Length: 389
Ligand code: GDP
Ligand code: MG
Image (cartoon, protein in one colour):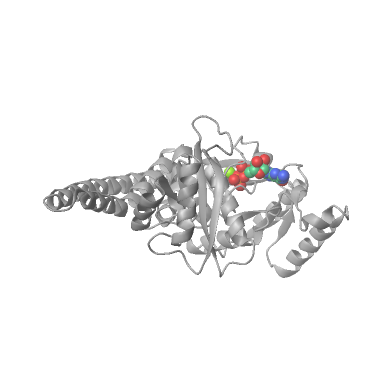
């Protein structure tokens, strides 16, 4: 029997998602990961039709999944007019090739998906150049394997020489592009550095945080900058900086002014090519006098998201900077979904506990806000002023 489970809009690709549920994961973790992958897929314009996971020690080197599971996915892909299978990890070139042969549909890995989203959202010259660079770096090793694959199909003898020559030509072209893009990026970085220097003596505050936690929304609340805030991962790549002036809580003192910048969201398993080419975007963070680490406290995995942010900060040498933790979306905080229906104030009670534990445990100032309901925004402003004093 053949039939579509769901109707999809024209032009949207029908996707299955595939993830490894590693034995080392805590319970529920792989589902969270795949929900995030589905969200990424949606952002890229695909519709998730079904999710496949397999319990594994680690992904198989040849085919990611084991043979039995792979056959199951192949059957489903065939029966349900699936266009693309999206894998939650970066696949090696040979894994991709093997999977294409087995599943007979387009194979995309997490890195490619993220690069795709970044590419379609890049607006400034800097962001466009960074993504182009990362895409070429991702492509370089894969290009070779693509040709090897063609060689094998052609039967090898007599073709081999020609194939290798073409690989070399193509690789040289890509290497050339990569070095051009790197030069271009250097120029842009220099220009940006001058621009940043020209913001004469003003203190700098930068948002950091996992993607989709509400950074842009809070930026807009504080500055009315009109930054794009969307329920999408990576709604935008480009950092925005605005001058902000707060009245001083002590009216006998000068107002407090500073530069506030909104940067790209962090995400786990970011393609390493992207992290490299991306460092200059994070210059805003490296340069900042104060960081606002925004956390979506309504997300089940918010502590893990905080860890991703912290380790990225460590990588760029910004983990020792003064930082305010901004727990956002307290309106949606729901620590125990089943209990909430019975005790109406469970949410509030547990939010208080959460507040207490954070205030006791961290040397870092914390503030709990809802950007949506504009709750505690004044407290946030005060904390920023204190942080800059
Ligand atoms: P960013 O990726 O960190 O810049 O996040 P955005 O500012 O684009 O917000 C992501 C999504 O979260 C949007 O749909 C916002 O409307 C939503 N959002 C932001 N703040 C809140 C909040 O306090 N409560 C709720 N419920 N949603 C929020
Ligand atoms: Mg944003």
